[in-house]
Length: 259
Image (cartoon, rainbow, N blue to C red; front, side, top):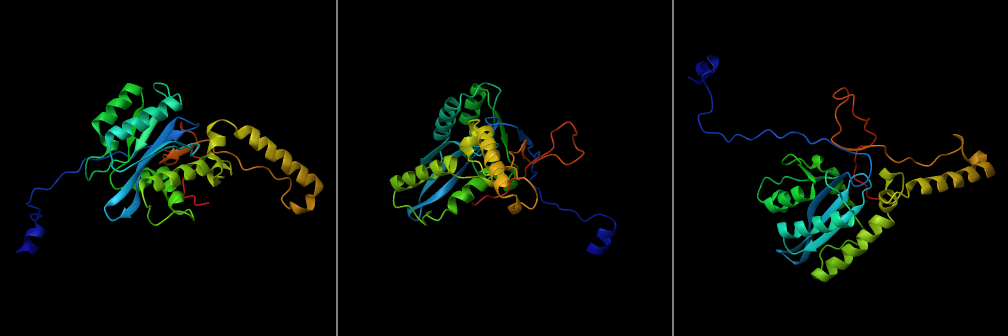
């Protein structure tokens, strides 16, 4: 019977099916600091099961600089508002300057999609974008930064209390922003790039390499070395070649950096 029905295209699903909306792939471009921020929340394991802490982190995707972070015992739209407002004030973000990208989390309400956060973004003149559901590739910079954090040699399996977790996070972000030589930044630190000191550091490196080449040319088989450059453009989901010739050529594809 089903064979005959199938031959006449009469076999179909009779139950009501949930229709999922079509989500567009976000395509975000940053050519300098404070143009696009990515933010997310990760869980830090506490002293016992069901007693965890939540680390809110806002990251500039161009400089990889953590512009703000907050540790709490719950996910809260009010805390997200506080972090966002303080970070924008500290970085002197003007209306229409910034795009803030976050996960969508379709499984339930979270600060990323809270109405209060959306209203605050409107008041600050910040454009919001979201990842597609269940697609971590749409938020690669936050994911990579969390992996760098959790692969640190001193990252514990559990934190004894909130004070311990806060102290560890404070040390980590100090190292990450000011001492971590990021491979995707030409081995510069996020703070160096974010606050415009990269040209001076690159010039100093070029001087040092030139002196080394002049003294020991035989060590450099490919000629006089040059410092690694900064990326001209950083993308979340760069457009495919030929899709939009007016856009700058993507110069970087985010990969997890565990240096």
